[in-house]
Image (cartoon, rainbow, N blue to C red; front, side):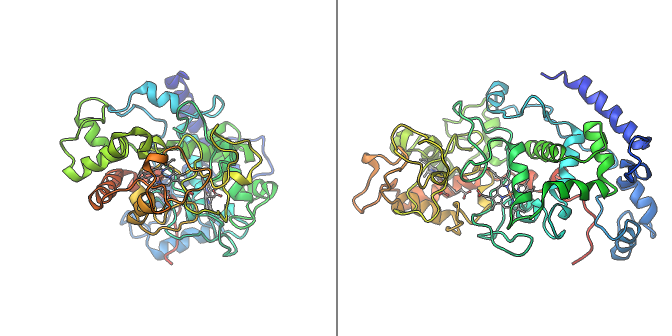
Length: 440
Ligand code: HEC
Ligand code: HEC
C-alpha cells in the first residue's frame, strides 16, 4: 500500500545513520554525545553488567542510573522489534481489516516510530512531577486497563472515569462510522487523544511546551526522534504520532476465539466451534446470533466481531438518571434518529481481553462479568435513550428492558467472553516496559 518494503529499508538506513550519531545541526542539544545504540541492551550490558550474568541486578541498576544523571533510562532491544503488521491473521479477511483501519496517510506505523512510542508510553517524565506514565494507568497484564475503579494521577487525584483497555485501536471504523476515543468519544483521532492525558490536570499535568523542552534534554529522545522522523528535535507532533503508532501496533488476534475461528478453516463464526465447550458455544450463539436468535437483541449488535469494538456510543440503561451523561455532555447532535439527546450514551472499548479489564463500565461500577450480565438480564433501566437492542419485545415485566436470560445463558455468556483473552498479547515483549527500573 505504501510501498512498505522500500519504506522499511529507508527507515533501517535512517536508524543506522542515527546510530552513528553524526549530527552537527543541533549544537544546543546533547544528542551528539548519545546515540540510540547507547541504549541498546548489548551496549548497556557491556557497560553495566559487571558480573556478566546477562542481566542487571539492583547494584548495577543503581550504577546505570548514576551514569545517566539519576534518571530511568530505557533498555532497547539490540535487534529492533518489528511493529508494522506483516500479515493478516488467516481467519480475518484483509479487506475487512482494511475497512476498519483508522491509520492516517501521514502517520503509517514504522518500526522506529512505534519503538519511540513504546518508550514514551512508559516514560514517567511525561508527567509534571515524573511520577506517572501512560502505562501507570494502562497495565499490560490487564490488557492495558487499570484494576482500580478510578486511576490515580500525578498528584494522587482520581480520574473521573474508569481507564479503558488499549487493544486493536487501529481497527475502529465499524459499519462505516468512526467513533471518537474515550468513553464520550471526545478525541476524534488517536493522534489527538495522546496529547489529552498529558495535559489533563489530574492525570499528568504537563504543558506541551514544557514537555518538549524537558524531553529534548533527555539523552535518549533526540536519537530516537531522529530514527523515527528524521529530525532529532522533540515536538508535540512527533510525540503524538509516535505514541499513536505504538498503540496502533498493539494488536490482539490470538485468543481462543480466534484460534477456534481459524480452526474452521475460514472466517465464519456462525457454526458451533469444535474446540469450544457446549457452554462456550451457547454463549457465542447468544452473543452473536442474539437472544432467541434475534440479532437485534444480540450483544454483537453493538460489540461487533471480530474486533468486538463499538461503532458509536449507546445508552444501556445503567441508571434512569445518569450522574455522568457521557456523550450527552458534549455539544454534538443526537447520534441516531430514535433519540432526541445523547444523555447517558457511552462508547466502550473493545471486549477483547475483557476478562482481565475489571472493573466494568465507564464508572467501573461492576466488579465482575457476572455482574455485567445480571445488568443486561435484569437491571436495564427504561431510559428514554436506550439502544434499540433493548426493544419492546425484550422488555420484561419488572420495570426493566433487559435480555431476560436464564442462569445457564448467563453463565454461557461469561464463558464466551473469557474466550476473548489473548495470553500472548499480555506478555508480548514488544509492548512491555523498556525502562530499567530500580527495585521498589
Ligand atoms: C491517570 C491515569 C491515566 C493516564 C496517566 C493515562 N490514561 Fe489513558 N485513560 C485513562 C482513563 C480514566 C480513560 C477514560 C477517560 C474518559 O473517557 O474520560 C483513558 C482512556 C484512554 C484511551 C481511550 C481508549 C478508547 O478505546 O477510546 C486511550 C487511547 C488512552 N487512554 C491512552 C493513553 C495514553 C497514550 C496516555 C499517555 C499519554 C494515557 N492514556 C495516560 C486513564 C489514564
Ligand atoms: C445497545 C448496545 C449494546 C448492547 C446490545 C450490548 N452492549 Fe455491552 N456495552 C454497551 C455500552 C454502551 C457499554 C458501556 C456502557 C457504559 O459504561 O455506560 C457496554 C459495556 C459492556 C461491558 C463492559 C466493558 C468495559 O470495558 O467496561 C461488557 C462486558 C459488555 N458490555 C458485554 C455485553 C454483553 C455480554 C451483551 C449482550 C448480553 C452486551 N454487552 C450488549 C453497549 C451494548
